[in-house]
Image (tube, rainbow, N blue to C red; front, side, top):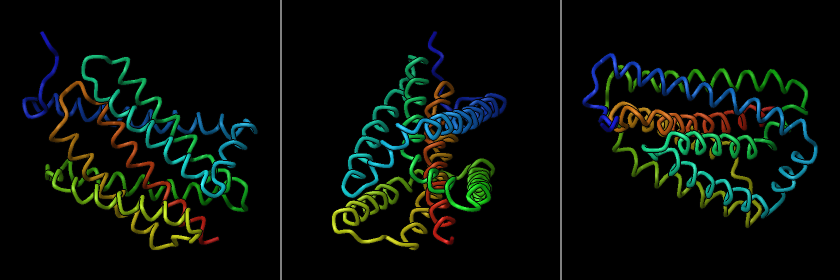
Length: 229
């Protein structure tokens, strides 16, 4: 018999189990990200390649590759019949995140007080992520309506990033603030999907969505912290 059970058909005990599995996988994703990032930053050749891709229009190549891998990873993670593909998709996405984070974390680790900045950014990110997630879990509010607004917001953001790279202007502080708002909205949306959309065996896909939103939030919070120094 197929183990596929819609979320609304789960008992309260099953729902709590589903939550635990999802957030355990998010936590594991963060741990693997840290370990992979440490390895990447410990290998000069990989660091050099990543830094070279931040130069001028090469950043577009980096973003394009990341978006392609993200699409592949999401499709693999959504496969409800093959657990191996789900984990491969999640792992692929974590590695892609670790690679694209190399330049930002390299800057943070090289500057004076960088470790303190990283800790502060991480604590703020986790606090916001936890608070937003709890809002959805306890209120059971459906934030699926946000999908259209998030899509429009991310398309506009991508257009601004591309324009900034092509014409050489800095997007500045307010762009980062706007992206933090988008990331916060994405956390609400992804948590809502976990509560209302996913079936009982899709905790890997749910974790990937939450992990992606968490890392997006961390990226722009860290950028703001770094810009202050």
